[in-house]
Length: 271
Ligand SMILES: NC(=O)C1=CN([C@@H]2O[C@H](COP(=O)(O)OP(=O)(O)OC[C@H]3O[C@@H](n4cnc5c(N)ncnc54)[C@H](O)[C@@H]3O)[C@@H](O)[C@H]2O)C=CC1
Ligand SMILES: O=C(O)[C@@H]1CCC=N1
Image 1 (cartoon, protein in one colour):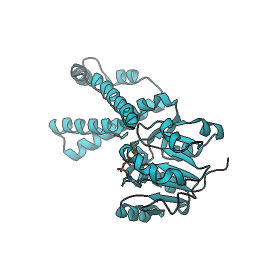
Image 2 (spheres, protein in one colour):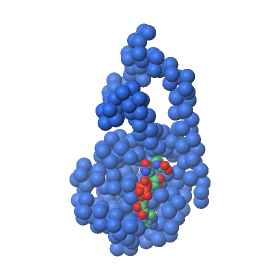
Image 3 (cartoon, protein in one colour):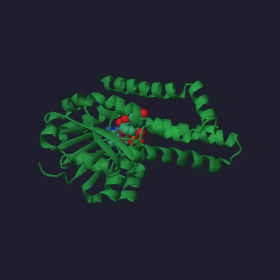
Image 4 (cartoon, rainbow, N blue to C red):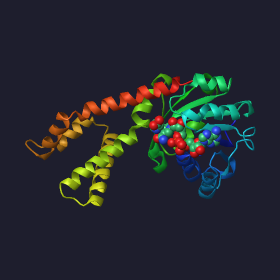
């Protein structure tokens, strides 16, 4: 199968903007081959100005011609979007969906016979540090489609997983940036309470999480081993860790991932 040249986005919101940034600024894809359908005219103008792509409030001008379609509307808006475009796509168009919770089977009903890739990215994509997981339907497997891998690895890490794991991916890395932002904010508050100016506290909290995450990825060591190295006998760290354990922070994080995973499952069943 030939490499994808032109691609049409359905939905030009926050995630689409982050993906466009990777495509245009990192993979250096020619913006004249990228088309966006976005309901809000002001956002169309913004995307055009920022990335040089063609953006309009309807997909009619491009949907029948593009080699790939990337679905980037909210789950609740998916049916209306599919009604508008499904019957008009090219017969061999590849479909990529980032819509949370929506299974391949549901997309296959709308696009029978098409190669379809379901992806769960996350917002750090916008700074080149995304975590995306993707899964193929049989038709995408048969053509060994590399479009999604190419797009999403251009703005972070991308791994292929079984579809049965996509809700768990959503609960962990899809929603995960929100957990990290909450932690950064709470740690900043702790720093302020301890006397640090707010702007320093925020940088210290964010850089500390960034550095710790980098150590896990670069050393390959278990987080517990890295934690031991910070934790001096009768020192400061064990005093802080004890409070975190007493307050159930570990259990709360596990439960947060599980709650988001269940919600992803629910979203997939809405229709
Ligand atoms: N925000 C996040 O962290 C993540 C979101 N996702 C998924 O990405 C998708 C997009 O999310 P966001 O970008 O955050 O949402 P968003 O609300 O920023 O963007 C969706 C855009 O689609 C437009 N739209 C709605 N119906 C349309 C239609 N029929 N034709 C053209 N445009 C239409 C809206 O005007 C809006 O700008 C969602 O399905 C979400 O589940 C996936 C991973 C992470
Ligand atoms: O909150 C949501 O539904 C989306 C999916 C993953 C992250 N944000």
